[in-house]
Image (cartoon, rainbow, N blue to C red; front, side, top):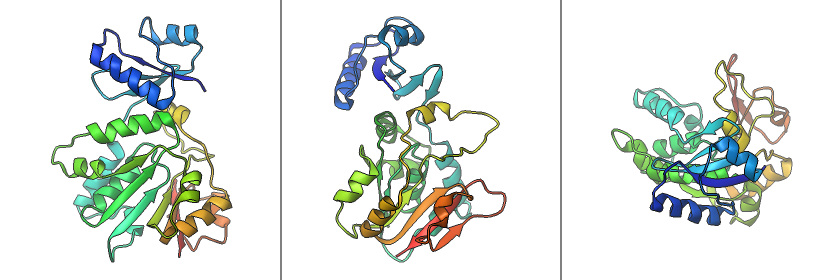
Length: 259
């Protein structure tokens, strides 16, 4: 998949300079904005564009778009404010300071929710292999602002790295995180009435969880490994998992390896 960087129409000089600098940092070609994105894609033989403008950068691919948004994190944290449990956060240790490595940052929802839950008593480090999702996420967690400031503070505390999880785990210090979390792209996506995920899927990394990766994670984690997958995933038949948390009718489940 070939991606390039451009800007919105009639961009100012600072926006153009930012786009050029980020293109160089990410290793993408930069093309000056001229015609429609469809015409530019055909002319330069690219599949998609990372587009900079007055707002946060976003990704365009053949008419599909992906933009940073905090919808799921806002909903989940508001539910916890009301005293309801979050399916993921309830699995995190509560006895002490908790360091979490989110190996699949993606749309930022899980990292942001865990960072909010752990404010004052934990830290979230996140990895993202896709340069497109990394860049949109990097700008998003720096630029997001909510009404009361608590979620803003939580997302600012996330330490985001542009790296694939296997390489990171191979190089990590043993027992350096309390919890390691994976939410890989599902082989069988959850069906939705409104397909608003296509732009994200086109930008995402599809690295799977081979047992080698789980073994690496077991060396780096101190307390547990959590994996989000479909309830019927064959991954959960691996004997390493000590529990699978999910209820009938739920489209996802959390597998846990306790250490």
